[in-house]
Image (tube, rainbow over all chains, first blue to last red; front, side):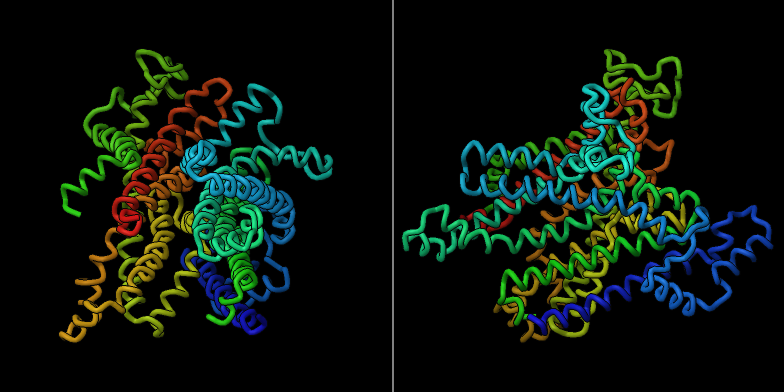
Length: 315
Length: 280
């Protein structure tokens, strides 16, 4: 397991380096001169020169790249041109909303998808199974931001159970904050839970038809015991893959859903930064999200090896 | 299975028929809107704004008095065009990469292509769109490129995975013995055998493309006004949802039904084209 981990760690580092190069090239090299880009066409030459100096643009691109990466490693993301404060501070502030939202949505996804998928698989062909398949088919096809709008219409505008948007802050109390994140989390979780429930169902159906399940039943285990001791663990491998993939969709989805509910998270930050051409903020947020996706994929790979020891020797 | 038998099986599959009918309805709407729409979508009539659905405006009007049915028809053009080109990019680049990786299994080329794929997978299409928009400004082209790039590793992996077992088959061996090179074998023998799989995945990516385009246009990174797009229409409806909920209903249902149709069609095609499932 140690050798496997070290090997995976190496490719993790390589991915991070290449990803950072791509992001740096797209945002800082492609626009030509970032300073005049950020200030727009009407900027005075001396203002542009001052910003060039401030951003360190007079250095060669490779020096700037190393300075940027060095900063990322030490937690210094640079200074936002529009907010006039360190990007790391702004990002941490926004993460306090986006991260709990993503975790909340992922927990809902798993809490709903696992039992529903297991139920449908163990009662294959029944009315329960058919309704699960029909509902999840709809859940996969529904755009989550539209579902979010519909929930606002029903639960905020008509029933007035929730507010239509905004975030009171964690200072307002844990429950108030969680309540503000509930509709967004449900909207995010719906399509993901639908996908995961379908994967869980089909994966479990595959394992339930394996010979070792028949053997277990022949040894005298009840269906439930065979399911718990043998089938579930084996069925988890494809499910883990999907959870790993879903994390990146969840992050991207969170950016969009934050827009529906006017939540001041990373999503709002990045869209404001785009309209204000605050390249430093966009660059940092994109890098942070890509970093998160790569780390999660790495963890999923490790989780595989933990669930399925055969994988350790194969790679 | 004969062609006639295949057609009969296709008509028996409820998923396939319902899915194709749904998708076709929107495709027909899109084509029709090239020549005719009930109202002109560029015409702003403030006097008739925010009208609820009626006999005159079946789906009501928006905050500029534009007919929503007409806008949905024109919006279908946008969605379908963006998704088709994006799938085209994904297939056009991804399939050759996948074929090359399979032909050079275990070599440096294979390794490079697969690691490159992993890297692209770390960039969700929204992040690609964010980067492109930051530098070049928002446009429909951004959405196409962003969704297209995201599709490349999907097709590359699928093609490689399906091609690998084929390379050990006897007929490939005899093709090699007869002196055909890896490129010719890939095109003449491997590609025809993975086409079914590509069609099924293409349908699924097409529906994902429509969802992604709607999401990108919704947050303002995709199609720009005044071009009607379903995502844009939902964004416009957001602040008016309490007084004009119909503005949010119809574009949302348009997306839902198109995506649902394509997904059902994809499921139906997979059942039909995958011999393992068909014979089971």
